[in-house]
Image 1 (tube, rainbow, N blue to C red):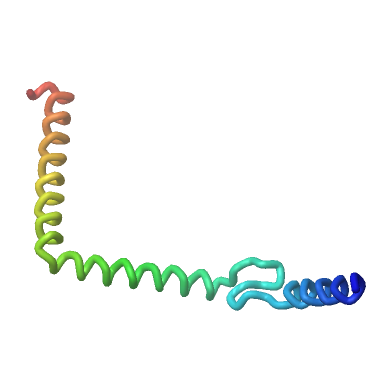
Image 2: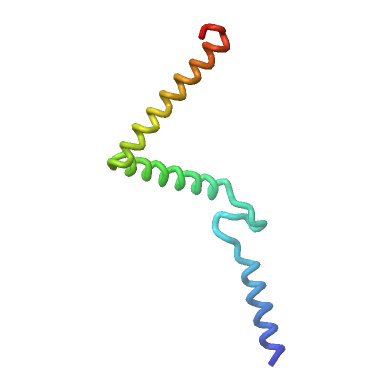
Length: 88
């Protein structure tokens, strides 16, 4: 009984090794097309998510906070530059 089970295990393993994943070479390296499609899919998903979030009240409040933060950062940077020039 041990023999057939062992042979069956070996043939399943060999079959799994022979099958390559779509989008990958036989060595297991992703193809350029696969990588490009993955990047495009992620980019599209992120853009769609950002669009949905920006239309919500929470998203609009977040955008306002980010704009305030950016403005404060620009003001602080200008303050630092003035102090380095000896103007402040």
